Image (cartoon, rainbow, N blue to C red):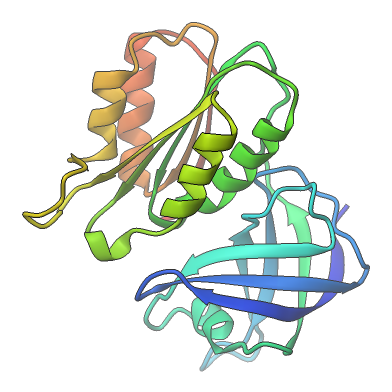
Length: 235
């Protein structure tokens, strides 16, 4: 059921030059029950319009942390939603509605899990990955994450930490336009799917990011066989 929540900004962290992490402490109601991958919505004013516009943002924190909500989003020039969120300061009161969305983690302990993200599409997948790793399962969880430049990298320590704590989790971060000193994987995230996914047997796929990636990865996976594919297009 969708409710209106009152919360307070309790932490702000700049992850890159244009990506910010915002943590909200819930006041009323004091806890949010949601499925990993779902989103909340803010009503924000927009110049020239008499009524506010609604902007959804995926929850990056797992459902096991019900008294706080973490958002990860990028700054969009002229975007009323990101301008509003970027303008918030620690201690500010906010209101939002939620949870909502049909893009969420399915309970299927018999399937391997592949998450593919571009940019801040990592947000709902982060919630899903952490939630899945909290479960008592032995099935592998893999993340392929595509970014552009070295300056766009974040969550490196967090990803290394998950991989060290949970042997069944692995990840690859690739850059499509890296500098000459980049020693990691180069290219688009679709190339990772093409080259490294050898079988879709017992696989569930979760995609989040730009529409071109989702279209291409869906085609690549379907060419390898049939398996569940869940998608959330950001732009």
